[in-house]
Image (cartoon, rainbow, N blue to C red; front, top):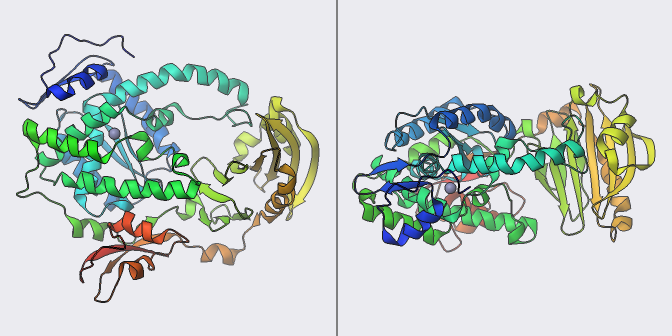
Length: 499
Ligand SMILES: [Zn+2]
């Protein structure tokens, strides 16, 4: 990562940051003139090419483009204005809202910036979104994204070899997992020094565009509370979601405050006069927006996974928690067991001679399968068998649909608990079924709705308005920065969640 850098440029910077920047070795900034000069790493032309090549793969890996033209245009407009205040106003910037319930934002080299629908649901005003976008623009202009992409390309050569052994025809096997290069690049975290630099650049761009930089801090506070919820859901804070904004952008509140201060000293600080939040406009825009997974992605409701578009559903045993992602659905019982569900489309499934051939040869592969049997699950043909991998007991269940695709349920358990999970796993297998037309019709996603606080409302009564199974008070803090101690004033517009 060190080779190819040009150290000849002058570092004219706040002395405190000098060592950090030397370690970063990627760019030098001249806050006196506000101009940036960058060292060569990947040519700007190559950066644009990489962005262009990876762009469609990122869209595919993160739930597709969010199908709301008004919100898409709004985000592109904010991003476009911010980019005009960056050091690369002539780059063709592309801002994309991904239809992903996860809270994330990232960038590719060459000016491709992404934020998720999940992230939009957290923001309370336009300035908070501007803070996220300007931070991502900072990663591009400082060329962190090019560096990160390059190092991912280097390490993924090893990965490809592993993938070739572990999977047949791109089908994730029990021993390997296929992750697109671009997706892997964006899921890799930046260094803390890069984060500080992007925050400083972000503050610069957003203040130049007239936004209040404190929105960067207020949004970060929400992200911290959200991370706490994910930690509680996973059973501990360390096991929190690894592919969200906190993992891809490791930051702390102190460092963001530091960035705002440093940017301010450098002459790009808060311009309180005329600084914008645009709260009401933003809230009315996201009123009615889907919250969490949408119908096309399948929904987690309690211990059930429901996919009305595929027309299927199944239940997991008590003690398991379901997590939905574009690649698969995972149910986890901490330290004991896991159930992974996914779907192999007909085209890929047809590379096998039969369902049994698929399960035994293409899925289990070298791991080998014993006690293979044909079973009937609620009228559907299925093949199941047992194996062991990485010290765990595995049960594979492949279920054929009428189009030739295959639903896969993979039960993974610590050998200590395999016996006691035998019946619960069996129950999950046989809970898998087609939904009726009525059931499909009645499934509704959650949506963000606006509510005006009235006299007599309390933080607790507002939390009760969130149609969620748990952690309502925490979600009220994540969505509206309202804690049990907040003194409410009537007339304030807030977000609630309902079907
Ligand atoms: Zn970042």
